[in-house]
Amino acid sequence: MKIKRIHICNYRAFLVKGDEDEETKRYVIDLPDGENLLIYGENGSGKSSLFRALKDFFNAASNTGQPFQENLFYEAGKTSEEPFIDIEIDDNSHHRFSSDGNQYILVSNESGADTNYIAQANITNGFISYRNLLKLHFRQKNQAPDLVSLFLEEDGLFSDMVVPAPAQSENKITYKNLWLKCVGLDKEALTDYNTNVAALFGELETKANMLLAFFYKECSLKIEYTDGAINGGALNSPTISFKVKLFGKDFPEHDDMLNEARLTAIAISIFLAHQLCIPPAELRILFLDDLFIGLDMTNRIPLLKILTADNLGDGSSFKDAQIILTTYDREWFNIAKSYLPSWQKTEFYVDNHSGSVDRPLIRKSGSYEERAWFYLTQGDYPACANYLRKAFEQKLRSILPDNMKHSGFSESDKDASYIIISKEHLSIDQNDEAWFFQPKNSKGKNNSPSRPTGLQKLIDTFETLMKNYRIDFPHIDDLNRIKNRLLNPLSHHDLRSPIFKTELETGFDILKELNKIKTQVIVKVPDESPVYLFFDKGDANTGNDYKYKFQLLENLIQLEYNGEERMLNAECKPIARFLKSDNSEEPREGKNQRSLSDLCKGICIFSMPPKEDKRNVVFNPDDLINQVYTEAGQRLKDLL
Image (cartoon, rainbow, N blue to C red; front, top):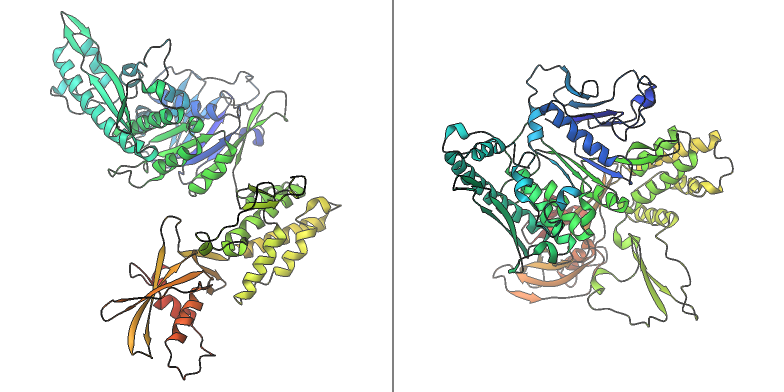
């Protein structure tokens, strides 16, 4: 089961002022296929209110009397409905937590199936905020955190979990209820409690260390549970403590000695391990609110890998959970989007322009093209042109191979070539696209500011690419024509004219055509290890068959457009050839070649009889994908 729609009205930050359609649908988040959700939100934009809304909703479904927190500025009578939190599930059931009596209501249930999974979802305790993480290591008045309370008492993480394997059948109840029997000095209950809790924390420790290895392989965790005991007619409560090792060395007070990033990584690993220890549920929500606060960039990506992995190491994963992830960091949000392609993305802003009270403004986070189209429909043509330009730049960069986007040293030169220039004469800068090396003037100042590759340069390079590979792209002239007139809106004098709108629509048509161009990396060249390819050819001069080995120095990419396919040039370097009869090696390291086609053509020419005319030798691209193969024996055509 997954949530497919969230609708909130007059709960905490989500103020609705009337019954107009635009107002009543102001706070709706659609997840039509039950997708996971990534949210960017500036401070005060309602992220935490959404967190609390869903948490309160599920709590209300299992606990009668959960108070509904109305927006402080809500005025009864201005809307036809009482404040509510609505959830629609993909089984076509509609659920509501209403301020009218502070009650949970099943509004509709088309399938007629049991909807007890709503109440069960509350038991998983899948709502984790940065404040929750602090409970694991934050000391108050120099007192260690109360971990027994955090995990096992009334509202603890495991308190509503049913004891899985009690010796006494009557003790197969929740941990919090079993503890009440222990408080009544029931020795058999206490034995079952200690036995099952110790096993539970053993599993928690194993899974926490598995997750912690995603962040820090040098760090490990031990969870120590000391049994509760009845002595002299009194109950001594159990204790729980964490022991941390770093590079094999014990850290007795790790919460005081480790940096925030490591403490946060340990806390996240424990909370997520708790989720993996809980029995499966039909509806499982994992809401992580601003967990990135304590993590630097290096440790943020491992968290995404944990959440998206098919197998975390023991066969478990979070694939069955519907995940909602929030961040206040705009730059990180844009980075995370590329790691989470199938997730829905939504942006929360503070709307302080529509009245005296700040309210959240929720907007689906679309691509540059989607944003441009939105502004076109709103009649904001300058904003449309701005995002359309970004969309063209982004698309052209995705099409062009690196060796055409940037000039400079090639891959093959990076190990052997260097230039030494005094810092007095050269400065280095960077952006998300490239490094910039700038000569300084006589006063030691930069001559010009750093700039990424401009749109005109990208268009020119794209035109060169298509011409070099004899691919007809019919919109080059149109793209050049609108570039200066349309995609630089500040130079346009009548931004509301019908002509300007027509040109924008032409821009969308061109972008639609560009989107038909597909590129595929056939063989990727990693930074850490070389990649070798092979080509078999008989030598007419010796009468022997040889296997030629060469190193690929750039990603091998195939481009496709309107049914035409081209293998783009990728620099490569001859290494050796092997006699196929006995696999003996003949070192044949040679000059770098600009493409596989050139290299294989050279091998064919080298293998021809001396007297044969070599001037018109042509190497067919089909032969390239059929005959060149990897170290694993896969031919290029099998990788397409």
